[in-house]
Image 1 (cartoon, chains in turn yellow, orange, purple, green):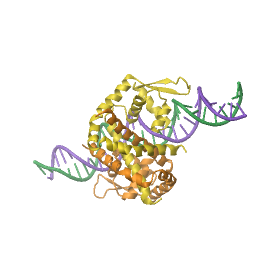
Image 2 (cartoon, protein in one colour):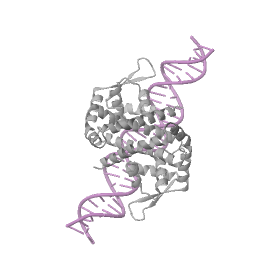
Image 3 (cartoon, protein in one colour):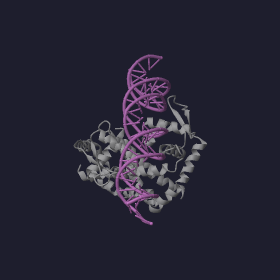
Image 4 (cartoon, chains in turn green, red, cyan, orange):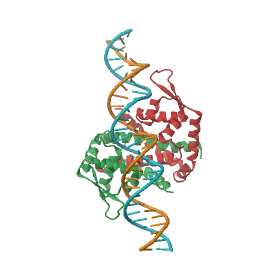
Length: 149
Length: 149
DNA sequence: TGAGTTTAGTGCGATATCGTACTATATAGT
DNA sequence: ACTATATAGTACGATATCGCACTAAACTCA
């Protein structure tokens, strides 16, 4: 592969990494003290897709090592935002449930992000973001597939 | 803003975060022991844009806290991949220079990534990635601008 | 030019990340 | 059913991240 092409792929992943850094900082500025992005991401995931998921489900969903997920969940539990219960069908596994407080924190955070999203929307209409999504989704899916081969 | 739009922006940043996670893992699998993605990113930046940059230059380029950059640079220095020199014009500042070994490690890593890029290129022709880049670049630039206002 | 302000970098501490190794349970193949 | 293998989760340790507080140098502007 020629150097210019390699450079293009590098640029792509580099931009992605910087946006990740900036958007994470933006989110964390709105989170209550002691919570960081991965905590919120879990709350949001469970709210949108339903709770009762297993830790491994979520490690896979975010593509983080399961050992990192254990740590994130223990933080959320310590803050009383989730509850861990044994899995009814699998003795090795657990289920993660949102508490009332967990739902509230998620909602309040989204509200707090309002002004930030307003600013972004003022510059990037939702259609433009929608147009960009399919490429990101397919790259993500492909990297995911690459990983377990 | 309606919920659906908020969801779209969230999805966008969520995809970005997952791609960041996966691409970082891909890179780190090819790095020599003891080096992680931020180390490589610095080596690559200095190679492409020229060394002699200050730590703060690079913290800004990657949008990481300067205290994180200090840590990353100390790791690179410990591995003998960069050299820190006092800044000739500014007594508060420093300059970061690549060592021969630093250039080699960067080059070898890029070579080692060859097969990964091949696979990616087989699914996503470089034109497709190029088409996606402008949106990412402008989102990055805008978030950057938002941050210091 | 001196006092106040800004900027570059670091020390430190709390917490996060993640690889390795482990335990317990489940599943598969015979 | 019995053994071998695979899977879910965690303990632990090395290192990374990043906020806060600090020092030293540079800049500002009256």
